[in-house]
Each structure stands twice: as C-alpha cells, then as structure tokens.
Image (cartoon, rainbow over all chains, first blue to last red; front, side, top):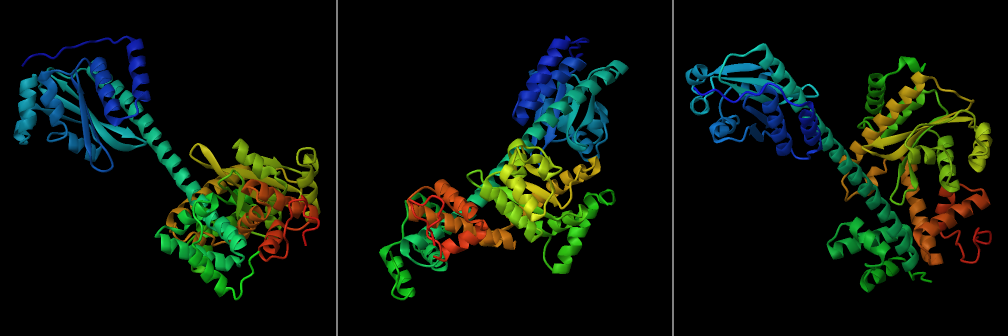
Length: 255
Length: 245
C-alpha cells in the first residue's frame, strides 16, 4: 500500500485562519469541508467528516481533494464503522481486513485503492449530543502523535459545528420572535378594524365584529387580513353588508 | 422565603394550580406562582405591541392592573425602561425616583405601591415584554431574589410564546384568556373610533385617549369603554377632552 502524505507541523496562523473561516461559515457543507481540511493539516492524514442532521440527512466531506481518497470520503455515509460510532458515541478503529470480514466491501475497496490500512473514527459532539464523526485514514501504525493530532482535529471540528448550531438556534429564535409579533399584530388589527367599522357604519362594536366576519366570508380571506385592509383603507364593507348591518341595528344611527 | 423556590418548584406549583382549574398551564398560573414567590402586592405581564407600545397581558391583582394602566397612560415607568434597555429595573422606593418618573412615582405612592422590580422578557436577541413585581414596602431584593425574578421572566416568556403557538390564528380572541388582556382589546377599539372621529392616525388617537384619561383622572380602560359605548366623544378642538361628555 502507498503511504499517504504526512505533515507534522502546521503554522499556528493557518490553524487560526481556518478556525475563523469555519466559525464564519453559515452552511453545514462549508463547515465540514473546512473541518476536514483542518483535520488533514493537523494529522497529516486524509481526513473525513460525516454529519447526520436531525432529519437523518447525511453530509460528508474529506481532505485532501484527491482522486485516491474520493471513494473513501464518499463511502463514509454508506457503509463502515461511522454509523456505529455515531450511534454509540464511542471511537472505533476499522482495519482493511475487518472491513472485508464485516462485509463492508465498498469501504474495503476504497481503502485498497487509497492505500489505507485503518480508519479511526471519533464522534463529534455538540452540547453532549453526537452530531457526526471525524475519521482519519492511516497507512501505518497509530502513534501517540497521531492521537494528539486527531484529538485537536476533533476539538476544532466541534467548535465549528457548535458555532453553526448556535447560529441556527438564534435564527430559529428570531423567526419565533417574528411569528410572535405577527400574532399580536393580527389580534390587535381585528380590534382596531372593529372600532373603525363601528364608527364609520354607526353600529355597535359587536355588530362591527359580525360585519368584519361577513366581509371575511365574502372575500374568502382570514378576518385578520381583512382587518388589516380596513385599517389601511384598502378594504371597505360592501353596500350590501353595510345595509344588512344597518337593518339589524333597527333604523340605524349613522352620522 | 424566596430561597425555598427554584424553577422546578415554580413549574410544579403552576401545574398544580392548572390541575385545580382543570385547564392547561397558562401564563396566569405561572404569574400567580411568581406572586407567591415574592409575596408581592402583585405581578404583571406586558408585551410589546406592533408600534412599540406595551400591551397588558395579565395582572395578578387589580392594583397591578392599575399600575400597568398608569404606565400606559403616562408613557413612563420601569417597564418601559426594562424593555428598552433589556435589563432588570429596580425601583427600591418610588419616593427616590420622583425625578425620573414624576407622575408615575406620585401616582404609585397614592395607590399604595412603594417598590417594584421589573424584568425584560428576552426572546432571542430582542425583548418582547416585561414582568413586573410590585411591593407595598420599600424593597431591596437580594441576589437570590433577583435570580429568581429572571427565572420567572424566562418561564413566563416560554409559556406565552408556547401559548401563542398553540392558538389558532383564525381565532385570535382565544389568546385573550386573561380577563385584563381581553379588556385591553376595548382600548384598541376605542383608539380606532377616536381616529375616525378626529380623522387622525392611530398613534395620535392613542395619545388623545391617554390625555383624556390623564386629564379626567379616569382609568384608560374605563375611558375606552365610554368611547366604545358612545358616552364620550372627543372633539378635534378639545385636546384634553374636557368638553367631551
């Protein structure tokens, strides 16, 4: 098997630049691509990242971008030790022979093609929850230095995923806040439109409420939409609705 | 004692009260528990409405209803500051805050309120309202009391947002499960009526309504009911509504 390229030191400025870029990236694919790149630079080994979101959608990336490893990175989301690590939250190592023994043929084939003897898979956690797996693909023995580099790569990847998760959470809360304001706005619009109709038609607020509902039925629109139209002056009761309201109010008291 | 309370106990007490009422847990149940936590004169909740004005949602006592109406009528008070600044506002003794809120401080003391602690309700990066706790005596809350106040504000925010999610938008009146809040819809109706009568926008109409309440010493809700009932009609050339009846 061909030895994969090894690089034992990475300038701190490069690490810093990649972590900043990862934290500023708004998409999951962007984050895991940078996480894989950073992992590969830190470990000197081909590195893959697999993330499975809450809906079960699997997104994977790998570095370096090289034909030799493309199959390995692609197979992460199909067969191999990754799903076990994801499910159990326990790091695992899978050798070429284990992959063959366990029937992970696409993985074994990709390992053979990429000159890889073992896959080390470690879980990626955000707030204690396993969101994905970071993998390094080795040709030789696992050294203490490899393990330290893998730990660092995992930590940085978790930072990127945590920032992304917080950003997503904030945007969800912002949407929630806007929905909340919209709800209040609609509710008050009905009361305001009722007051306007009552004064314009010379009827009681109860009758104005009934008028608003009749208008909503006639226009086949929700009452709060019609209410907004009344406030903005774009919707007014038809003469028929107004007449019905006036009749129901006896002789009426317009003016 | 406040130190005997924590979030779990507050939640449990609210559930017990709701079970007693045979209804789901609502902001009213949580507010009542907060009232007991602080052994307060009352607890009130206000939310920011569309144009940035505060709108009452719940008050555990009639006195707090009056305090909230007072803040709305005068356009000043600790809730406005808490919402605008996004921080808790302590009024340890209303007498010491006369220069800041001259009208509100005097009116509070007349009503029998001497102190208040107000927490903003945070949702994401913005505030959506305020939770007010009032006391009959000057009050300097301990750090534990302040922490618990934040817990109450957070729980009430969650509850109100959840409550809104569960209410069908086509039946908005169902959100107004609280008497005070339902009553406030009359203020919106009266504002709209005044805007048609005076041919002005809603902001100006709201100001005129509040000015009338202030000038006549009436509660805003009562003035609103009079406007809706046709008892009071404001005229363009009568800014304080002194000739309105």
